Image (cartoon, rainbow, N blue to C red; front, side):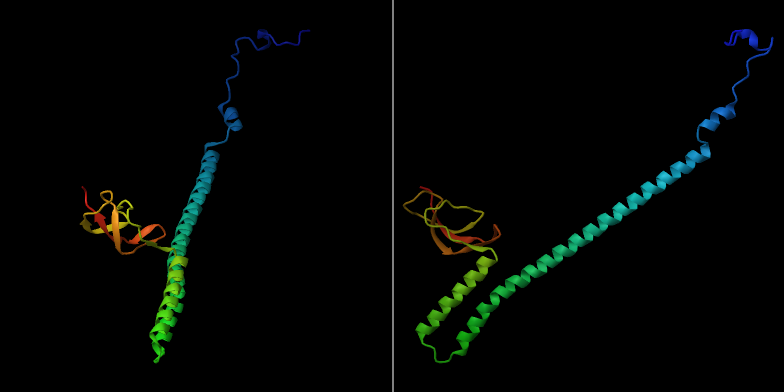
Length: 180
């Protein structure tokens, strides 16, 4: 006998059995199961979002605190470096019978202390030599004078300027040569 089914194995006049819709749905997850799965994924994503948002907020808050502390401690360090200068000035005032030479020597020592304190805190003098091209970003022209040098160059420095960390704290006051 032939093992292969033939078209006459079914009863005559009988239509093939219709597909059972519940059988195909049984192999796929039910709608309720899909909704539950999506809700779980949504909950995970929402939780991850909230955690990331909280972490970003904490990072921002910590950064603000660190900036605040850095400013405070930078001022503290600068003030601490100036204390020896103040001590030296007070010691000079306390000496009643000091000679002018002793006072001058003390002033020079105090000036060295002040210069060192400024250098440690990255405060640098701007004192352009004569003949330097006038730079409006670092110099302030007080007057223009006729001179035997190129126009718009520094003739003399009337007052030093200062930079702090490459930013102009005070421009140098200069006289500038007049255009010919």
